[in-house]
Amino acid sequence: MNHKSLFMLYLIAILLIAGCSTGNGRYERIEGYAQGGTFHIIYSRPVDVKSAEVEQRVNNLLAAIDNSLSGYNKGSLLSRFNAGEEIIPDSLFIEAFNRSKEIWLESSGAFDPSAAPLFDLWGFGFGNRETVTQDIIDSTLLLVGMDLISIEGSGDSARVVKEIPGVKLNFNAIAQGYTCDVIARALDDFGCADYLVEVGREIVCKGLSARGDKWKIGLDKPLDGNFDEGAHLQEIIPISDGALVTSGNYRKFYIENGEKRAHTIDPATGYPVTHNLLSATVIAFDGATADAYATWMMVIGEEMAIELASQRKDIEVYLVYGEQDSMKVWHTEGFPIYSNESQKYTE
Image (cartoon, rainbow, N blue to C red; front, side, top):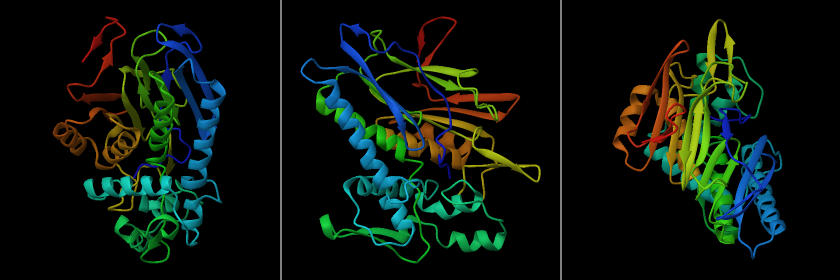
């Protein structure tokens, strides 16, 4: 299953001019570091709202999410749960857990935050990489499954319960998209009509950019080892009022005994995936859904991802698959693409 421990899955090139004024109001920027990567927020500030208020609210939310869902923060609720402590989950933990469990059921286990022990085993989690054998994988798979974890009670009496010792969680495949949702809701509360929230290159946006048109998001071409962000763009995507997330295996992998070990782990087999789906971009109503669905598609591969996307009316999908030197593209009919040649939008 895809998890983004270093949050380096793909480029989001934000093609805008921040800090300028248009008929939509003054656009301002908040940026910094969070969840092992960077975040950027551009928003049109209502005249009765102070910049300092918005920035303080954003920073408070990022800190709260870090203290709840981060596997890198050893004092977070998630880290304490994984260490075997009994925790009282906060509202952020409960919301992320419940949405994760819903998508786990919907995906028949392809999206599974409880595959955390497998991520650790292969070196893509919060621990050190281990020597992998079939016996170790078989024993580790006994710890995998969201049905092994439940939240019991409510309020101060709520507890996160694991059925057997050794069960762990890793929210990396949904946390950044969910974080974007939480910040977007706060901007809505401030009355912001236009904004783009990017956390770890996951996007939630609303309204228009400072230019007065849709926000434009650049997607990197999924070439193995392509760390030169923006040097090779696959597409430019115009989007408004939605979330966009890309998952891929071209930046987070290693070669072992001549084989590529991708960071997308299949919870059913316990092994890194070996199919030809190079990246999956999902546009959805909210960031948590787009994030989790992009991971789901990277687990199941191009054929099943195409079948899934073709059946859904609530998401738009863009897939890149094939070999490195002969990439192919498939996308849903309504997926928006900006053509550099014609300078027009094509739907």
